[in-house]
Length: 158
Image 1: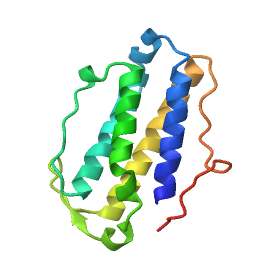
Image 2: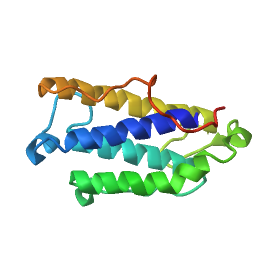
Image 3: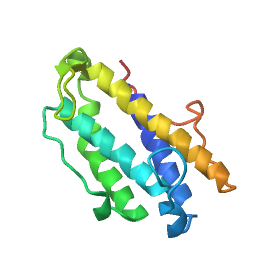
């Protein structure tokens, strides 16, 4: 599973690089579909990942305000900060807890850690697809979504 997190993080970083070529107006322009704008989509991906990972660890959700992270640089810093916080957790012994049931504050259902991890990965891939559509609408080539050919360094897979 960690390989898919590393894949998502690698693709996300490539989208941040891709976004450097856009104007601020293009980054925040409301678009059809998805959650709104390119910048807000990146923020949303990070926020959702962080909330679910905190839930797995039994931590309270942290409400992050988009208005405080309203530039590409700030969203990238948030991504890097959250990634550092959870990188070692994701690489340490998830096998032992993957069947544990988790309840998060924003949902009444119980989910296994394994279900949540799969949801996080699928959620980001879904939104990366939306970014790809918007890239084409802007007349630009999107970041490659290929898993094959990427240098994913993790050897942990469960």
